[in-house]
Image 1: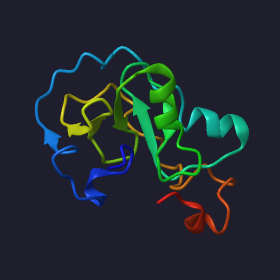
Image 2: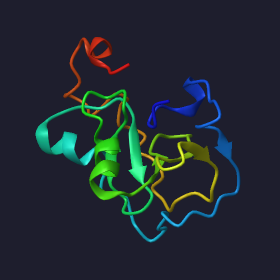
Image 3: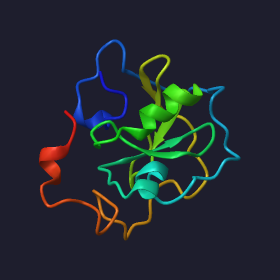
Image 4: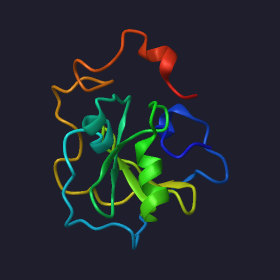
Length: 136
């Protein structure tokens, strides 16, 4: 299973199942998001499909369907195991270590990118053939 895909879009098996009411050591509710979009994509002129927020430090990275997969790269570089969706209307968490989605109290606002930011984003950087460029 791929860690950064929205759980509503995939079949969740033994690993990758929802675990409810988890108190997790890798969530720091004092950290604000690093910005409105993927840090690395914004720095390099890239684009993303969906955004993920590191629950430990607030880093915003792009999902695994995005061309650069920066949220997973952040996990591999830092060992921060928990991400939360940074998409409007989504409130799930994912733990890379256990490969499980889980529910927890929401992170502090903002809990998603700005409502006027398009998906995919950012505005003006998404190629016309973006769907063909997504990772499976």
